[in-house]
Length: 130
Image 1 (cartoon, rainbow, N blue to C red):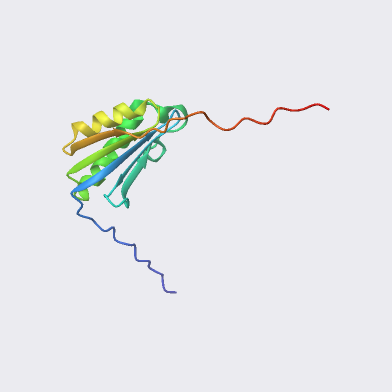
Image 2: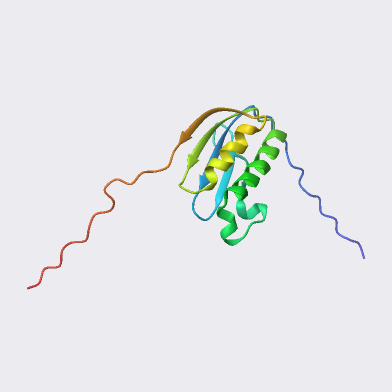
Protein backbone atom coordinates (compact mmCIF):
# COMPACT_ATOMS: atom_id res chain seq x y z
CA UNK A 1 0.00 0.00 0.00
CA UNK A 2 1.41 3.34 -1.05
CA UNK A 3 1.78 6.09 1.53
CA UNK A 4 0.39 9.47 0.53
CA UNK A 5 2.83 12.30 0.93
CA UNK A 6 1.52 15.81 1.17
CA UNK A 7 3.61 18.73 0.08
CA UNK A 8 3.66 21.50 2.63
CA UNK A 9 3.32 25.01 1.30
CA UNK A 10 6.58 26.92 1.49
CA UNK A 11 6.28 30.23 3.34
CA UNK A 12 7.08 33.13 1.06
CA UNK A 13 9.52 35.62 2.56
CA UNK A 14 8.56 39.14 1.60
CA UNK A 15 10.94 42.06 1.37
CA UNK A 16 9.01 45.03 2.76
CA UNK A 17 11.20 47.87 4.11
CA UNK A 18 8.40 49.92 5.76
CA UNK A 19 5.36 48.58 7.57
CA UNK A 20 2.55 49.55 9.96
CA UNK A 21 2.30 47.91 13.39
CA UNK A 22 -1.19 47.79 14.88
CA UNK A 23 -1.25 47.21 18.65
CA UNK A 24 -4.71 46.41 20.04
CA UNK A 25 -4.69 46.11 23.81
CA UNK A 26 -7.84 45.59 25.86
CA UNK A 27 -8.33 44.37 29.42
CA UNK A 28 -8.33 40.71 28.34
CA UNK A 29 -5.73 40.38 25.57
CA UNK A 30 -3.05 42.08 23.47
CA UNK A 31 -2.97 41.60 19.71
CA UNK A 32 -0.21 42.88 17.41
CA UNK A 33 -0.49 42.89 13.63
CA UNK A 34 2.15 44.00 11.13
CA UNK A 35 0.83 45.13 7.75
CA UNK A 36 2.38 46.58 4.64
CA UNK A 37 1.39 50.16 3.67
CA UNK A 38 -1.51 48.81 1.56
CA UNK A 39 -2.97 46.98 4.59
CA UNK A 40 -2.09 43.37 3.74
CA UNK A 41 -1.03 41.41 6.83
CA UNK A 42 2.61 40.33 7.05
CA UNK A 43 2.49 38.73 10.49
CA UNK A 44 0.44 38.81 13.68
CA UNK A 45 0.46 37.40 17.19
CA UNK A 46 -1.56 37.57 20.39
CA UNK A 47 -1.11 36.68 24.05
CA UNK A 48 -3.12 33.50 23.56
CA UNK A 49 -1.04 32.49 20.53
CA UNK A 50 2.16 32.91 22.57
CA UNK A 51 0.80 30.50 25.19
CA UNK A 52 -0.88 32.51 27.95
CA UNK A 53 -4.31 31.62 29.29
CA UNK A 54 -6.88 33.36 31.43
CA UNK A 55 -5.94 36.44 33.42
CA UNK A 56 -2.26 36.21 32.45
CA UNK A 57 -3.09 37.18 28.83
CA UNK A 58 -3.67 40.79 29.84
CA UNK A 59 -0.33 41.30 31.60
CA UNK A 60 2.46 43.55 30.29
CA UNK A 61 4.84 40.57 30.28
CA UNK A 62 2.57 38.71 27.86
CA UNK A 63 2.47 41.79 25.62
CA UNK A 64 6.27 41.91 25.71
CA UNK A 65 6.53 38.31 24.46
CA UNK A 66 3.92 39.02 21.77
CA UNK A 67 6.01 41.95 20.61
CA UNK A 68 9.18 39.84 20.53
CA UNK A 69 7.57 37.17 18.35
CA UNK A 70 6.14 39.75 15.94
CA UNK A 71 9.48 41.57 15.70
CA UNK A 72 11.32 38.33 14.95
CA UNK A 73 9.06 37.33 12.06
CA UNK A 74 8.83 40.86 10.65
CA UNK A 75 12.62 41.21 10.56
CA UNK A 76 12.74 37.92 8.63
CA UNK A 77 10.39 39.55 6.11
CA UNK A 78 12.73 42.53 5.65
CA UNK A 79 10.99 45.19 7.75
CA UNK A 80 13.37 48.02 8.67
CA UNK A 81 11.09 50.92 9.71
CA UNK A 82 7.55 51.01 11.11
CA UNK A 83 4.83 53.42 12.09
CA UNK A 84 2.84 52.32 15.13
CA UNK A 85 -0.93 52.63 15.66
CA UNK A 86 -2.10 51.93 19.22
CA UNK A 87 -5.72 51.14 20.00
CA UNK A 88 -7.33 50.28 23.32
CA UNK A 89 -7.02 50.87 27.04
CA UNK A 90 -5.23 47.70 28.22
CA UNK A 91 -2.07 47.43 30.30
CA UNK A 92 -0.05 45.74 27.54
CA UNK A 93 0.26 48.60 25.07
CA UNK A 94 3.16 50.35 26.82
CA UNK A 95 5.17 47.15 27.26
CA UNK A 96 4.67 46.18 23.62
CA UNK A 97 5.72 49.65 22.44
CA UNK A 98 8.81 49.65 24.69
CA UNK A 99 9.89 46.27 23.29
CA UNK A 100 9.38 47.53 19.73
CA UNK A 101 11.53 50.61 20.37
CA UNK A 102 14.30 48.50 21.94
CA UNK A 103 14.58 46.32 18.83
CA UNK A 104 16.59 47.01 15.68
CA UNK A 105 13.49 48.25 13.86
CA UNK A 106 13.21 52.05 13.50
CA UNK A 107 9.97 53.56 14.83
CA UNK A 108 9.00 56.55 12.65
CA UNK A 109 5.62 57.49 14.08
CA UNK A 110 3.41 56.58 17.03
CA UNK A 111 -0.30 57.32 16.71
CA UNK A 112 -3.15 56.63 19.15
CA UNK A 113 -6.26 55.59 17.20
CA UNK A 114 -8.51 54.66 20.13
CA UNK A 115 -12.12 55.55 19.24
CA UNK A 116 -13.85 58.08 21.49
CA UNK A 117 -17.55 57.94 22.32
CA UNK A 118 -19.58 61.09 21.72
CA UNK A 119 -23.15 61.33 23.07
CA UNK A 120 -23.79 57.60 22.66
CA UNK A 121 -26.95 56.04 21.27
CA UNK A 122 -30.38 57.67 21.13
CA UNK A 123 -32.51 57.07 24.23
CA UNK A 124 -35.75 55.11 24.13
CA UNK A 125 -38.98 57.04 23.88
CA UNK A 126 -40.58 57.84 27.22
CA UNK A 127 -43.55 55.57 28.00
CA UNK A 128 -46.86 57.46 27.81
CA UNK A 129 -49.68 56.20 29.98
CA UNK A 130 -53.24 56.75 28.73
